[in-house]
Amino acid sequence: MIFANIEYLFLLLLLIPYIVWYILKRKNNEATLQISDARVYAHTRKNYKIYLLHAPFVLRIISLILIILVLARPQTTNNWQSSEVEGIDIMLAIDISTSMLAEDLKPNRLEAAKDVAAEFINGRPNDNIGITLFAGESFTQCPLTVDHAVLLNLFQSIKCGIIEDGTAVGMGIANAVSRLKDSKAKSKVIILLTDGTNNKGDISPLTAADIAKSFGIRVYTIGVGTNGMAPYPVPVGGTIQYINTPVEIDEKTLSQIAGTTDGNYFRATSNSKLKEVYSEIDKLEKTKLNVKEYSKRKEEYQWFALAAFLGILIEVLLRNSLLKKIP
Image 1: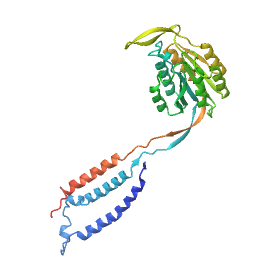
Image 2 (image 1 turned 180 degrees about the vertical axis):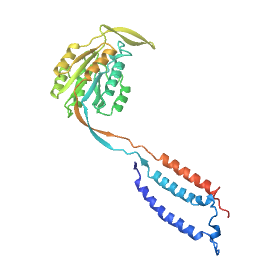
Image 3 (image 1 turned 60 degrees about the vertical axis):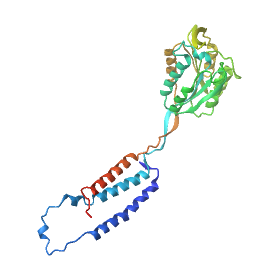
Image 4 (image 1 turned 120 degrees about the horizontal axis):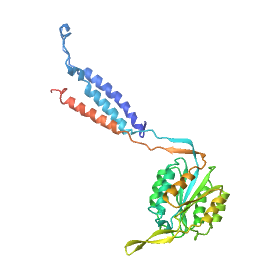
């Protein structure tokens, strides 16, 4: 337990003169009756009110202490914790071209990829993971982070059409490399998922693979899409109609990218196959990382405030009932 406004605790010192004043006041104000012999009262039963005589004052002191503690804002302890854990640095490069809306995977390729990637992230809590998105161009959706809650929250905004359409596989790899090249981890990995062939961008996929290799980055490539034809939604007059489009994945180039960087190429023709691919990649070796974890502060004044309120309430009730003074 810590206090956010610890300086308020000095107010407790003011209670000392208040207690001294109360003792002196009671001593000076007590009525006395002079008698020659008090032995006759020795066995007289004491009224219960005698025991409650100082209860209001004690309750007031306790309530004041509790109010001062509330002002000092008690909180649960929060610290930076440094720990050494096992993990690797991973960039997810995800294709968001419009062809990812094809529904040969359910509900479509992009949503299936997002769901399986989210499961993959949840299963690797100690890894630095980031997201690169690409279509006709590429950008970083989230840099490397161990704050996977933020990472998963960003998945909600991943959709087709937010950038120029096309498939710039080389740009997707290059963007991910720019996020991993300065990493100190011994194991640096890009997981590239696409459903097409490279047709945009200033960097060819194989050139990007060579760049990745020069920085010691392995690229695992995933071709997503069924064999043959796939249903693709087309808006027509306010409705959605489906046309069958051929699945064209440049498996040769994806295999070359993986081979150049000592990675592997996988083909995911269904949701279950896509899960198997990520499970296989999950077996990657790990390296040690130093991680700092931050826990949020939590206010704990509520119980102190409630106890102070009850103390004041009981004092008022006692003064106006059992211990009420007659003028």
